[in-house]
Image (tube, rainbow, N blue to C red):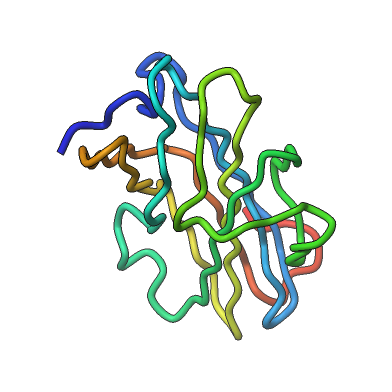
Length: 146
């Protein structure tokens, strides 16, 4: 499947956030999307870890927003961040940055999800873009995890 016009730039490298969280608290990372096409909108379908085994025993939440720039945070704040469901969220050229928000929580352990796949469509054509933007959480560590 092609990555299409939401493809992660090949020269952009990769990035991730790392943080300690309380049991059940969400660690959050924002994945900024840039639409590189002037035709109809891209409609988001789903977001998931590129390698699902990295999230075994973790609870994940996904949302999208065009109003908040979030690099990393603790907690899940749908009202403050103006979050909307991923499925059906429209990304248009020239309408500002869309950010996919990923939250990861667990009762115990450490989780490092290195990349996320974003499924979307333009018209009837489906695409999957892989973003090497990740998150590492360590449950029970108050400030950081190395």
